[in-house]
Amino acid sequence: MAAVVDWHVLLTSPTNSVVSFGGSSSSGCLPVGRVQLKCFEKCSGVGTGFSVGRRTILTAVQAGKRQVWTAEPLVRGKVTKRAMHVIRDLRIWMSNGEDDESLFRILDQWVSKMSPERRDWLDVLKDFDNKRDRGILFKLSEWSFNEDWFAVNARDYTKLIERYGKAGRVEDAERLLQEMEANGNIIDMVTLTVMIGIFGKARQLERAVKLFELAKERGFMPDTKAYNALMVAYGYAGQPGEAELLLEEMTVAGVIADVETYCGLINGYGRLEQADQGHRVFELMLSRGVKVNTKVYTALLDAYGKVGDTDSARAVFDSLRMNGLMPDDRAICLMLNAYERRDLLNRAVGMVVELESAGIKPGPESLTALIGWFGRLGLIEEAEELFNEMEKNKLRILPKTCAAMYKAYSRAGQSDKAREFTEVMRGKGVAFNEAYVMGFNSEAL
Image (cartoon, rainbow, N blue to C red; front, side, top):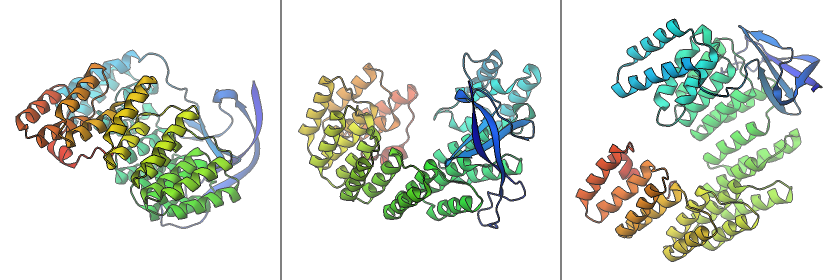
């Protein structure tokens, strides 16, 4: 059943660049009044809006939230035959190690013969959306953005910008943002929030703050995710106190702080080894009735672990379980790291046995931490046993897992076995180089 909602619609003027971070502060957002839109449940319909190229798109804001509708349905069901055809050819191209010219020739021939639709290409991109294929995913995405039949939209640009950010390619993310605007796509608070997060994690606090303030000057209404992104930026810059001031600003602006807000603050204090401040933020969150999750418990546990307070870290870990939450692989791994800092191997092994008896199995991150610890203690047989268990149980073997075993063999003076292990794992498709091994630290998980 359709519900009629009163939305405040904001249009972005193409003549005022949002991505010109140092440009004029004149408003690029023009309120066009109050309109009645029929918004169908689960976003199954598209209300009246305005067009950008061939696409109908609407950016709407209500109570500090923003949402973008497009006429495109979600991709569900089996991969289309057209998509399977080019995926096969692309996999062959990858295995042959051919150049980019042959890649684009394959794509052009596919378009000419198969006349693909947008849905087909989304299936192709989904197949390559993993860390191993990240390089070709970037090439495929940018190629399709110049294809008229694909009808690229703001969401496509934003998702690729976010992927570039996760890969640490800040310049490519900025370039794509500028290209996005130049091609007439609307840059809304969703896209700007992604860029704020990218700047923050790249330790470019000044740029993150500048973009956040520019967004407000242009008439955008930062929501919880936008504030959280800026808080994380302050945390990475070692200024959690400044991040906490944003919490007060959120309250004044009527923006609701969620568990991610407080988790970001606790992580910020944890990086400075200020576990007491992290605990204070945790108590503040509880007093405000915010529902906790495993992630926020893990952040506090990590803060205590970094200052060597294993008793408090274990108390947080146990509290997590007593409150009906399940410790994930990261939480277990960080607890093991806390024990290793104090050389408490017996307590660490006891915890793992206790968890397994409760039906909680440590994952690849936790077992990698134990393998590294055993290796540093010269317990090669124990490390091998854990590694073999991982393979037997078909757990994912991470590059850092292999690095931990390699270093264990090297420390024990078993260079031949280390080289043999390297060749075997590379034959199984797990690649790790010498530089990775030398830079590996099991506590940096």
